[in-house]
Amino acid sequence: MSSRAKLASLCLASLIGWATPYATVAAAHVMGRIRDSQVLTLGYMDGFAPFSSGNEQAPQGYAVELCRAVAERLRQTPGFAGLQVRWRALPEQEVARSLSEGQVDLFCTPAVETLARRKTLDFSIPVFTSGLAAMVRRDAPATLLGPLNGRAGDSGPRWRATINAGLSKHSFAVLQGTVSSDWARQRIRQLGLQSTLQEVPTYQEGVRRVAAREVDAFLGDRMVLLAYQAGQAEREQLWVPDRLFDMHQVALAMARGDEDFRLLVDSALSQALAGQRGEELYTRYLGPQSAQDRLLQGLYPLPD
Image 1 (cartoon, rainbow, N blue to C red):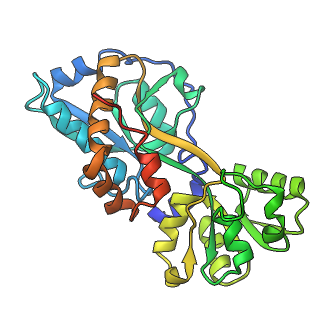
Image 2 (tube, helix red, strand yellow; image 1 turned 90 degrees about the vertical axis):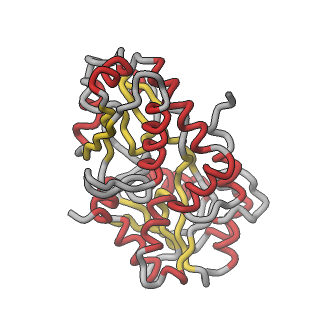
């Protein structure tokens, strides 16, 4: 399965859908284990560009670079000068177990931190804010573009009755069987919109329908939509507004219980995400920062 097909099949409403039913086996003393072996094992999932993709010899992506910053910080710590980095590509179903059993020290594909996952795993500071967004054609009517981009007297990430006129009588596509579908149906019903909602099996199909003018907008995870836009022949005619209708922060997961390792990870990420270094890294993988992106990214690093 190609990286793009794999990305679409998982539906990144929360970026990663793995559960954490495993007990914490090797939670504590991560730093001691790494010091003894002089090996930092970094896990990731292929096919999650722009966050993580590629083979174990040369993975790449925004979150992969953040994990390299963690390795760099660890090498500067006494006792870790000879540190080697080992990358391990993980299938979705092995992520939680590999972390909890100490087979992987840090997972370099961002995930949503939930209360259920915190029962067995720890998480870094946030590294990105994702959420539900829309893809449209740039030549869509202003009555649709304005509300979708938050220019209808509504400053928050939500729909109000004041924008009904802009959204009514338009057609929307959503990924079948996802929270995006449930959310869209609920909002259309609550606001009494005369809109049609089509469910599609994949992101690829949703994007195709927008490009072919079969629907007016496709709702999905913003970063996945941006990745698909970049791969379309019609990419100049497509647009993903900044506005998020639902937000969730994502972070890097690790085994639960070693506060020293978590502190080192957070220190490295705070340095990598802050200031010009953070903006350059963001731009390299995610494109130019909007005012909203810059505001959100500025909230993540912790002060010294």
